[in-house]
Amino acid sequence: MLELQNISYSVRENGVEKNILKNISLIINDHQNVVITGQNGSGKSTLAKIIMGIIQPTSGKIIFNGEDITHLSVTERARKGIAFGFQQPVTFKGLKVRDLLEIILPQNTNCHECCTYLAKVGLCAKDYLERPLDNKLSGGELKRIEIATVLARQAKLNIFDEPEAGIDLWSFDNLVDIFQQQQATNIIISHQHKIIAIADTVVLLNSAKIDKVGTPDEVIKFINTTKQCAKLGGTH
Amino acid sequence: MDEITKELLAQTSNLHEIPQGAYNIRKNGQLLARNTTAAIQIVSKTDQDGIDIIIAPNTQNQSVHIPVVITKGGLNDLVYNNFYIGENCDVLIVAGCGIHNDSDQSSTHNGIHTFHIGKNAKVKYVEKHLGLGNNAGAKNLNPTTQIFMEENSSFTMETIQLGGVNYADRKTNATLKAHATLIINEKILTTDQQKALTNFTVELVGDDSKVEVTSRSVAKNQSFQAFNSNIIGKAQCFGHVECDGIISDQAVINSTPQISAQDVNAMLVHEAAIGKISADQMIKLMTLGLTQEQAEAHIISGFLS
Image (cartoon, rainbow over all chains, first blue to last red; front, side, top):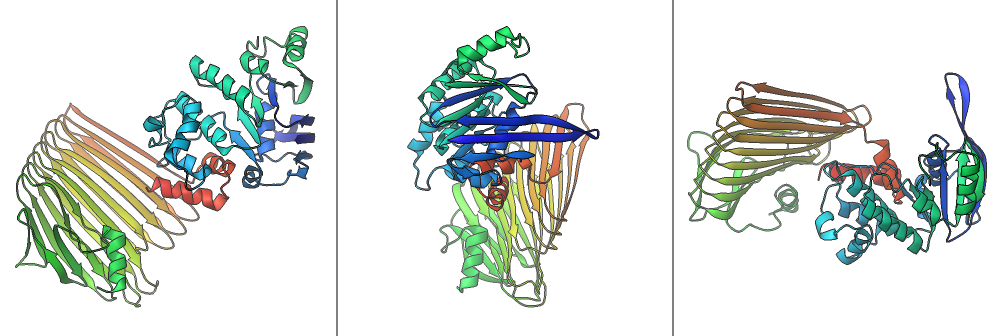
């Protein structure tokens, strides 16, 4: 279980304190698909990075499976079972797809297991294992490899920051299936209606705060009522 | 063969035993071992220190190892090796150099290699440079490579400085005739106070000749690297130079890629990027469970692989 207790994060801009997140409290139970949605700039990605430890909150606590992880490093959180899929996949000169998977998987992992995770995202291992993780791969290919690395970790908690960004329609449908089949807890930052629709819980962020927590129907109804849909870029 | 020599040969030339085929092993300025084959002759020069390696036309899938090891201090080794590669050959040439110097005097190897590549010949040339031993006596390596490429020939050069070399001055000059292709991959790691200088000059004189130079360097601590390349297009040709560097601590890398198009159909490109390891790359690997140190080691190892 993940518990966020009064998480706040602020930055100073031109000498003025600006709240990116303010008093975010949330409980996410195991094996749930939780979608965090909201307007651009509402703090979704920042919240995801705070959970992973990439950004330190200004105040508040993060409890993961009963342990306070607020001050743990990214590495320590990863080792405790949190995985993170970046919105913009990172490229490396010299590292191959195989290298990333070999970091994650046990040393005696065979090619078949690498294939399993690449196949889940619609990539043929034969074609991709030896490919360098550089800009010669398309944005969509990089994104799918990014998602494969998250799946390969078999973590307790997966965080996906806009996993749909940059991938084609076929891969998107496949992605939705992956989220539905996952046994882990998934926190998914997304604007997409299809992803929101499979959530057990949807969290709507607005202006650094939680505006609404509920089922997909409840949150979409709330959005429609409060006329946030246009700002969400076509959530429904 | 003593253990130090074996280690140097293994690391610089991937030789774990006496190789099959042609070889010439030079140790401390002297010939240690040599073998020739029907297709590959190795002949000592009579006018200066060095060898001529003569590869008969049409020699296919054969290799030549000409490693150099230095295991003592106070040696300034200068050797001239000329390669004559016949038409239609397809060969691998491995020419590593390792210095193990535990003394307080410098040891230097200056290897002057000249390649004459025949028509339609294909050559892969690998040179690895390594310095071992305590830091009192410097380990210096100054390789000079001159390449003359006939029509439709191909030369792939991998030049790798594995570490421990106090000073290196690497000069490579090439002239390419029509349809010739030159690929150079350089990888250099420097640490501490080490200094590595690289100069490439490539003249593309024949139509449809092509050169690709890729340099990847990592400079740590207070080390210094300078990369200078000059690609001159004198015909309808293509040239591409890419220099990527990672620096940390107080290290310095200077990159000066120069291109000179002297024909309206010459197409020359250069790219250069130097900086510290990207924070995004570090964080990505840390989200996979690596520590900061492990992540850095992975990134550098991949970069120089």
